[in-house]
Amino acid sequence: MTYWSELSPREHPSGLPRATPRQLHSGETRYTFVHDDLEIDDPSLDLSGRHFASPREYGFSIRGFLGGKTAWARDFANGTMLVVNADGQSHVLSPRGPARVLFVARDGTVLQDSGLASRAPQRAPDVATVRLTLTATVDLQGESPEAARALLMRMVDRAVLAGALPGEPDVRVLEHGFEGSTVLPADSSPSSTHTDFSQLLDL
Image (cartoon, rainbow, N blue to C red; front, top):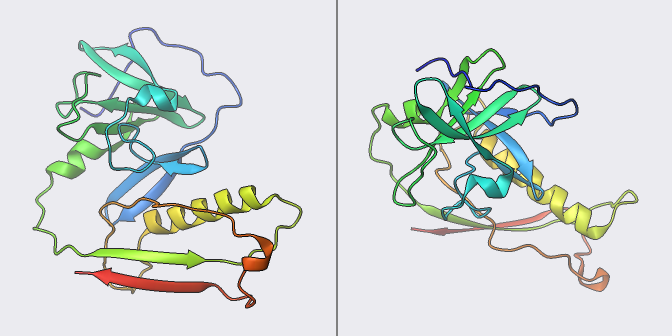
């Protein structure tokens, strides 16, 4: 299906945020949006990206579409994000399997369909778990420490979703989540202005 049309077309209010297209790897683009200072690309998962959640928690509502289809939907300035089951026919999701996330342009053209990507032939991944500990000293520029913490998390999240740069090894992040974040007291901040970035690899 390359076209979605609502049973009851609606006016899109002004001032809606834009969904951001992210190039995950060659041939696949994911549209994301910010919720609670984190970038979301699958509204059927909680903020950790590991557990099932209702898209309602991210501002989605159930809508009907031509062909008897229903979907969780949320409008953005540049289109509408839809969340449906694996068959692409219903808003009824199951925690036992991945949901299908689509992004549809204003004219109904599908710009993203995670279901099509998941059906593509894939090799068995050679998986390792990497734990990163990041301590950063920041210049607040008038912002609060909590605002700086949230911004740093968004920056790391965007970098992970963006993937490797051209010419770098094609290592792909399958899933990720933040184990925790905190603002250290002023007297506990590192004396160096450089970022202390350590990496542990659990095989």
